[in-house]
Length: 371
Image (cartoon, rainbow, N blue to C red):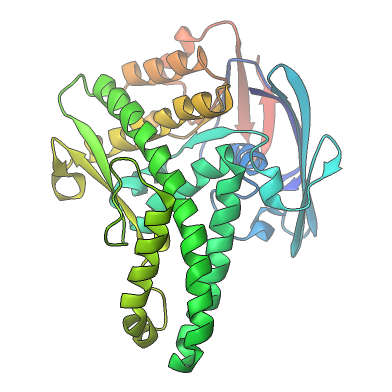
């Protein structure tokens, strides 16, 4: 899988931009605040149907304009595919090979990327919401049915929370919503469990190679529903049963609080080094290595699920690595997957670059191809 061209119109600071990418390694070089990350953001948008930097699509539209367009030609399983996203203030439309997609969930999954950015440290040190988003984003790219069940779960959850605020006289309706919540929530949990079982092995191996075997890395999914365990084979009827039981037991608490206190929206992922919780003692370097191991594990997971490697996006992470790790990360990964990097300087990397590389110099929102 690779991206061949990217065309932007009124996206962020680019009124018009067209880029052609090398099959292996592409490097955007420039000072901060010049527009390097905006190009990666557009590529991420094509994969996920949303930005990784803002929840408001309108933020991506150039100041003073009322629309923006992202177009790209990609290659999937040696076949060309054209992607297009049209942003308008208050609306968003997407198409694949000229065919409009009814929903963004239909669009997501046609193109896969893995993004590693400085804010990924929040995967380890931030709150549970960021770790749940990490799981949801990855599964959204590889399993469209997961996005369906997750969106339905969130819709029912919102309805249930509205009724909880209205008081116990809505109990009959809440009972119906509980059944829907358990149905979709069990599908969400089953897919999360399968994903994390695969990721646990992949991430542990990658962490071990980065850290030279000095520590053992693992993680545990903390499910808020009593009786539902991450480890071992889980049966959907049992999860539904336990979920309904937990919702019934927490009904009075939920009515008092005005929101639902159990379910996948309350779960967390806890990381361990040498069987000790990471948040308690891990250094900044260990936390960053965990985040990197998780992202690199995504690459192999996607390969296992869809049959091709995704495109790797490295956004301003080289400055946090020494020269040797820069070289190992960028060169080793670009031999495996198409890699697109933003950096303020190539440091010692320039002399190590192989022939199949394209350098882009970014200055004041202008990108020039330097070979």
